[in-house]
Length: 317
Ligand code: MG
Image 1 (cartoon, protein in one colour):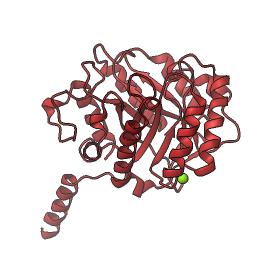
Image 2 (cartoon, protein in one colour; image 1 turned 90 degrees about the horizontal axis):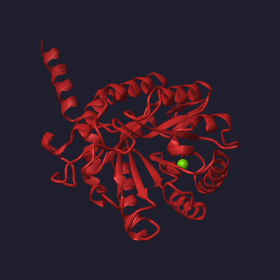
Image 3 (cartoon, rainbow, N blue to C red; image 1 turned 180 degrees about the horizontal axis):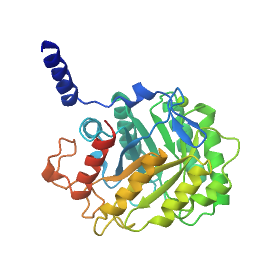
Image 4 (cartoon, rainbow, N blue to C red; image 1 turned 135 degrees about the horizontal axis):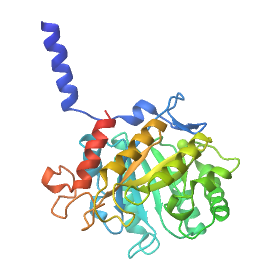
């Protein structure tokens, strides 16, 4: 009886003090075939949340919010979306951008989380991206926590030009960091994954290609495209997704969203939800009345945020 009580107590303590330690558990990530794997070559699925544009919602770029997203939402990866457009972006205000990004990266390292450093742009700016990623790889390349996302969502660029851009930025990162995962965007808001699958970038390692979906807009056709790409051997990572229309607004489509999640889980593809921000739109997960530093109550989290928290807690145990 004593033993039973003791083990029950231990389970209760473990549940109450849940703390994901993904980097301690999985270490330096690598790509094996099409699969994201841990240090030992075992498959890994990262599931987490993206912060909104740093220049629109800098208030959520703080260490307490990151800790809360790990401890309470069970995120094992955080995406920091460094805005390259809209007012006060990285190009206009580098100081703010670097302060926000380094705060989140350092907090992720401290909390043993993976962190995606996202160049959140819709237009190609090769020289600026190359300079940024060179600098950031020198500073953070030694940490297994870091994942580089070199171009959020291309809109107008062809795959031919994106693969040239990708090779340029990857080579720059590899001067300083031989191994961390690099995510490459594909044409048309990260939907033409078939184009990347047909001609992946040559002579690179630990590179994955991103698909973004908004479940009420992107249905079976994009699920099929992603499935074909993965089964054809392309490493795919869903670095941004949400359960409403591509505008980020309109009604939630839970049924469509869970079709996506079920597919990604069956293929062992990682997924990151958009976004921790407080705009009056469906995809912003938090209300303006909520504090910046986490400890959000049910009443401060919007329906999409509740859905994400519930799903993360289900899968990230
Ligand atoms: Mg490294």
